[in-house]
Length: 441
Figure 1 (tube, rainbow, N blue to C red):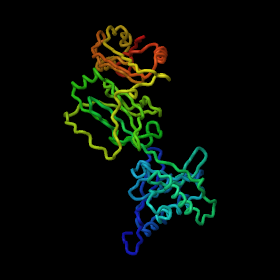
Figure 2 (spheres, helix red, strand yellow):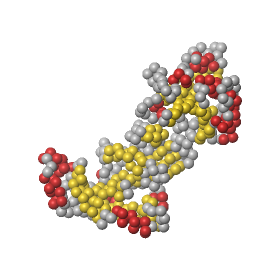
Figure 3 (cartoon, rainbow, N blue to C red):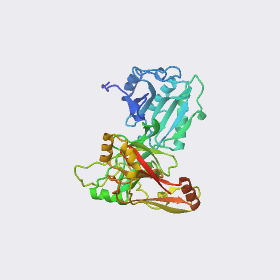
Figure 4 (cartoon, rainbow, N blue to C red):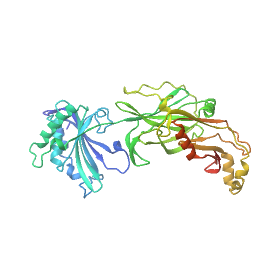
């Protein structure tokens, strides 16, 4: 198809995609581009050799396959635009949706109306999609026409042109304005930000996808885009662990506006943690984030240049360090901000508490415990606080730890909170086990 003599060029190039059915992976992993063309002749060369939607999409009875794969959707988009909301061209747009029983004939009409510019003479349409949707024992097919903007007046004009196109020579039931549903694209990017020693660091952009560990719709950071790094000297790290060991990491959603989605805590005294789900504090969406942490010795201490400017004009919001947004909400009718401080200064005479337990350990277990040492730990407001490691149970050798929590609350609510808590358990821990506990009233 390289010979262009006697061909009829289209106004823009177009690409055809398929969305493959996969048990794992996010939306972007399922997308595969089949072909790209920019002449009428090339279009028909591809179009006549592609299967029709009715031949590959699930009909609610038979799960069809094309070769070695099952297909959920066909997408027809302008070249350079990916059929996903997160594409910059689609990010601030919208779409018309309609459901219909007729597949092949309407899909042909919709595609021909786009490339022939009878539906959209002004380049507002970015593409179209036909997708099979399954809900329990019901199945349906949805046609989608994607637009660049959210201008509802322009969208109405395009809807009318689309209906004229689809209803021409339509032998079935006519499609009406009431059959069309308009939807705006709200594709947020997620960022995590934190400051250590005055240095603000931000993750890359988290994009919409399936959170693999929970098989749920959410946001994911691909490759190293979710890694945040700081370089500290040993002296700086010890000072932070002593004076300000709790890191507060803020989560933002960035779209047309910046939305605060809450925050979560991590502790420098427990620097090596496996991947785990942590609840976001003060999040109206009840979100969770899947995180781990690691402390490594750097081969050298580099001079860190300032972070490069972002590739878009959306703002990066520094974390709030003062004011009511920095508080935990306790109770329904807060009237002031209170500070709860917990100080652990030391511990002595712990040997008798665990002597019997240690005697039951095998020599190998006892060797591992003595090598790893011991630490004290407590948890409050979903924050786990841990002392430095010590190796003798007579007098624990660790720096004083001080933690403060700003609470937006009232005296009755705080009284109820502490009455329910009754005590604060403090645990004596070692490798892979809790040895004993004590309680602070």
